[in-house]
Length: 298
Image (cartoon, rainbow, N blue to C red; front, top):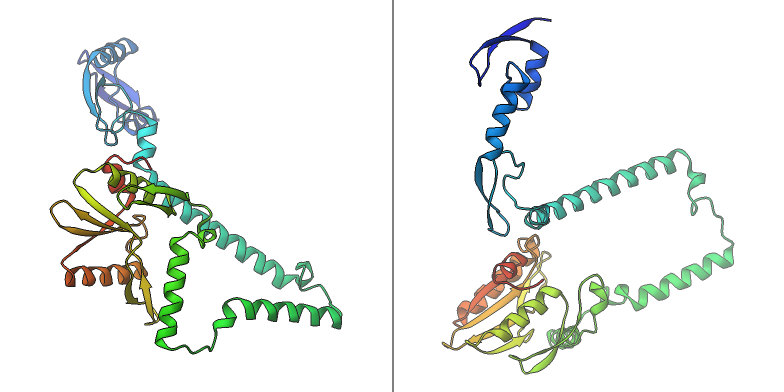
């Protein structure tokens, strides 16, 4: 092992140290001293020095020791709050990768040994096959398969769309979003009880009720036509139509930040902006970041 010469930052004396030992200090971004005594003196001076820590999440200011390991956040709670969206997206991606890995493993296993697959190894009688076929045909006729190859007039399509929009507004399709917060809330600005389908919608309703400069609000009361990815005519129902004291009308849509730039939402928002421009209104997308900024509890 080779010896290297260094100068002590405390007493300015020259000393020798093994090269492998010096590499440890370099990794930790520290300067080696000639003795423990000199190292202790430097540590004691740093311990008494203070620096200002400004938290990136809650914006609080604290005087901390120079040796404190915290650099950007005052606590772990603030760190996770600020990094929540990024961590959630990372977790979702990790889940997708893991699911793909499990899927590929099972496919390989079934290819090599088909008998281990429960369905492939089963042999049904003729009567059982006919029964399964009837059950599947019945399901197909009463669900999405019922609408295949059906041709409706434009008037009939508008009638079906209006009926579904009404049922959606009344919360009859709530089973689609079982994982989200849901319930009824008396929307004072709208003057009626409405069915909300997420905690973000509820938080924004409460915020609108607390605003004195807002005259009235309408929840899911407007229907705007647009064309989907298959160029089929669809209808988009924005969340809030708000009328301000100044007479200005604004159309608001509550959407997660990670989903607001999806292709489908882009088409919806484009149609909404066109509608607002033609009717002297404004359109704005509300995300969870904005809700936090205005102090809503979500």
